[in-house]
Length: 301
Image (cartoon, rainbow, N blue to C red; front, side, top):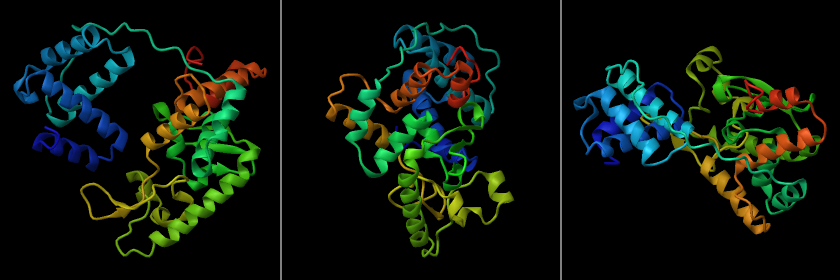
């Protein structure tokens, strides 16, 4: 099933249209589960709206997924029928909405943050420090380019965060030496990569690649936290260096928390929650925290 021609063509369809690797993997997961749930019948053979509504009800009633998880599954299936199969689902409403309440955020004390960071070193220490010191989401951190660090104004520029929004967030002065070292490391890798004849530069969104033709092979546009090895862009022979893997970062934070003896369920997002909480505890205005986190609604903050 994992290597089915249908799922392969679906992956290629999304890759060509520049969907992020994260979105591709998420959509493929839910579409595969949808097909398995309907006894491996091809989606085009099913009554689309009815099959989707039945599946979403199954997720809510039998799997007890959170509302956000059910919404992701819905997005994947709308994409499948509307974009890929060209069979729009129309209005969907006859399914049980997930009612499982969201989890309460886990927050570390300032002492626990220090203990956790003390168990990290090098690149992992810098990444965790930015998650906490700038309140970044994990994917926002990993998508940072060298040029997004503004040392003069002690700011980090976040482009296309959640909801495709841009924002500025704070940069801790203490991290400047570590960041300068990291940028030098990126420069060394960049020089090495350019020696390969089939190196195509860093990945750029279509519009930006057309507008800034030389950007893929300029240092400023390289990922601040690059992957350890080069890889071919899916479906092409173009050699690129992607950003650091999300799963690897989360694992390093969890491992550090265990090594520090922290009994809480710690993830990368825990550091973002802790950033916001500690700002509020220090007297920051709720609107300032909202802006730093990139929330559209202050209720979320």
